[in-house]
Image 1 (tube, rainbow, N blue to C red):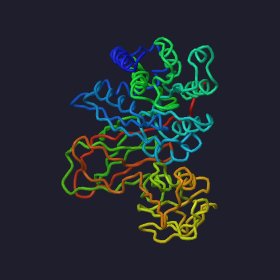
Image 2: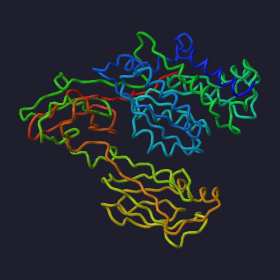
Image 3: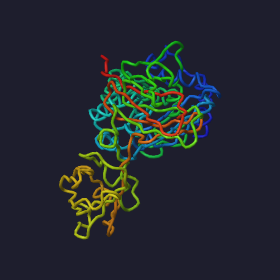
Image 4: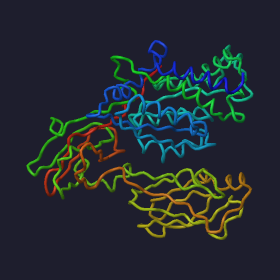
Length: 453
């Protein structure tokens, strides 16, 4: 079959896919029903707010993800989506597990689409951490076929990696899509070679992206009456500012008692001009709480590479809000295998020197780099280049909390705190200068334990 014929057939199948599949086709659809119910209930007057993250490597960076986004936007025109694709080409699970500290958990999606190659134990560990640190519902799927695989054989016997992904999906109660099986059936039914949908040994042609988007998108269905699975994905609860969980003090302060690790304020637009409020967690300022800080993904490596120069920047002491710069020094080796460098924060100042072959902890404890997280030597070898003189890596330390709340337009959402222990807390807003105009608080609580067989 010619590719024009394939694309015509894809268009026909896409029309059929718009009708969706039923829960009987895929019972695991119940595990994304908090998100689907929220979207179905969205109206122009009360729009749903949904954060959607695609994470993985090059396949998850391809155009099929944009098609799925457009499908969701078309199906739910009143919903206010925040889409992000943070996939990194070439990063298998043992590497992506390091960048996830910057890209995944701090962004805290409502719905996560996740696929990555590499060791399945690291794959599973990423899923487990999502369950522990966020209230995200998760979509997992098996891989499409690469050029040297045979669909007829795989339909008879699934490979070990496929079985492991299906097992992880069952254990962590995620939407489970056996895309690999669908792919095999599609190729066999239409007498197509595996390569008809591929641009190389594994990446997708436009027609392949169409099929991929269809096989993912058709599984995103609403199961009437289903509420999701709080035992695994946790809960997202909206608490009215006038409700019993919020105590109003004599000074006009608002104290929310909650169980969870993330709270967002929703504005009613009626705040007083010039008003503001100090925000306290458990009665205290949050700057010194290490868990409430995040580091952005470090900048890319040399020679025009798309991958981070360093996969993970940690910290032993609570950061301050600032920009950081790592500068490679002249006695570094040209191949990047032994880099001598210095680091400095825009607030902290000069904070020490280190070597890429050794663990580095800055003088302030606000920057920690493991030798295994350096990617520069790999980059230079891949690009057949040498280390540029004075090459720099940059990142930022950012708070996952709000020190001072100020009134916002109606419907605006403000992150008040994220990353605290998943337990009982109080969040207090102490106002100055008038009403704050907060209509409600949205409380996110990861599940305390992950269940599954």
